Image (cartoon, rainbow, N blue to C red; front, side, top):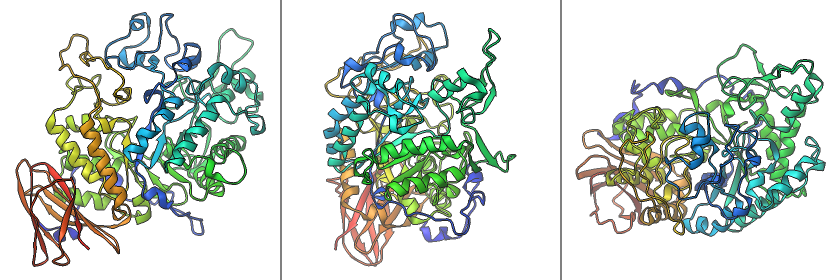
Length: 636
């Protein structure tokens, strides 16, 4: 069925994502608001996301200690605790697990550390350059007691254990006036990060940092001040304090609103929501405290222009903003204005995800323009997985096209092209494992939620599906994103199983044979980097970079045949035309693809693809192998 038949608006009730695809009128820009342009470089980016604690241990002398982890979850650690060997069998408990009284495996694993650091990143910049990526997204690097760093204890400094001198850095930061940037020292970790930024920039690689301006850790310096001083603290208006401690009693009455509820972990900032009864994201309003907003801007300025000379070339190139939908829109408009006043080419990408987990995803339209350049595009992933992975919600080619068109409603071409098209992240199953398990994306996606969830290495059929998916990802509008290790075949269930240590050739890994459920059988898997898959990724990245039409060209669907399970779309600009062709069926299929002329076409990916291409009467005829994809370019 040719795609022309799909130009009539069709409403499928394929899955309840429909409820969130209709653009909302909430939060739209008011008349006269300034909307900044999307950075051109972001449209051409190939992203690589690094979770430093799990990327590479370049300096064992700075490995975390129990003292460094105080104030984080789970809170107490046995005397026998030690850093976990890099090649440890993932589900096998360390000896110290038996001494931890609280929780099960997923609670105890939060105490696990491998010692990844910035020296490890620095040592592997040549690896990143060889892979061909053009932009790095770092998960939070701010000083924090946790493995993930979303529970900051100090925004202004890089985590002490990511640099060469943890104890000295801790002493330095303790002596500063935390809300006065004039007193902030450059710690050894701060300086090492700037060196990493400089080296990445020398290789033409952009850098963005992840921050959460929604909450801190419970050991954050401002919260500690409120805990000690009560209502007289100069920072008491930063948080939603439910009750202050009464020093006249032996009990600690200090209570605050925590992220996700309760008083357990990450305290959230106080917000002024307009109107106050609004409970549906996005919210109008702002962060309540002017001094909090100033502190956030001071930290932001520090990393955008470290030497403060007005030239941002030595700083980061933007930010990924955590749980952005939970922060009022007025703050984000102020934040964008401030960021762009320092670096007019800075990129802001928001984590805009759930309206109602696990079925409804937020519409990004209200967040784009005067707030963000793009979002982490989980919406695209769910739809693409539905067709290319034939996973819930399973889609036919025509349904895939309808949903892609729905996803793009109300979004300008510039913003579509700048989207961060994620296939796996720190918050979701790895791509291979997600394709291996066909249930709904990020729902019962780890063995604790589903005892039958497959946690072992997938077979060849899944790798074939992954390659099909990747050809789509690298030929589609939106910047392709790689979660560290995807390129070498890492597998893993939902968080925290997606955060295994990076695979390196010079590190020996134990056979992965332990199941989440002690005694339950599973295949024993050899763990090592997949060199062939890495070559596949390198070739895709090279193709993307050599053909700018894939970044900024128009998109037109040419074939969506539900009977044959085939799909083809064209990317076009004033200079080039490229067609991506896919056969999702389990047998060879012949395709007839409409063309504007009888011009000749060549296969540019994968190398050596031998399909005969015939063109006549403005139609391209070819045969596609089962579960395969390839890319054609018009010969000029």
